[in-house]
Image (cartoon, rainbow, N blue to C red; front, side):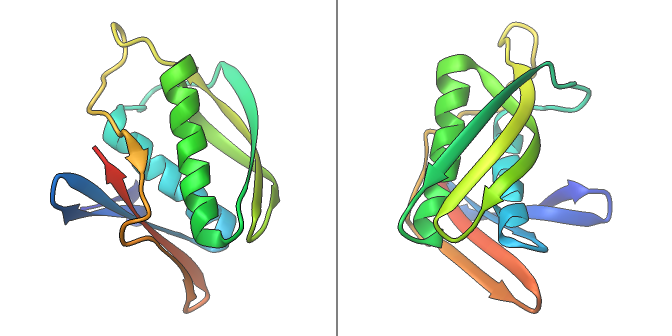
Length: 145
């Protein structure tokens, strides 16, 4: 299933036994990582109509692009689980193969008010891929549900 802005989807899902596969893409590596985050949170909550009221800044580092993707999604899950923070807008301050520094704007989720869909427990290394192809960046990750 492809999901995104109108006729220009930015991520899609693929079946994995007991888990959920996610592919995302973008014009650059940072945009692909951001679209992976959007795809992950799309599984968890309906964010339609929400407006940012809080901000956070996170910086993640890893030894390679693949590990950076897992670290990025894991840090976002941590913010969501511990603080209830749901990012809606992403601004890359610094990005690269081993570092991602991002300013996030979002909301604090209230389970009594917001439409929750499901829970993602973790981003895994199973079937993990980060590649550049035809002038775009593609990422693939399996999410433990």
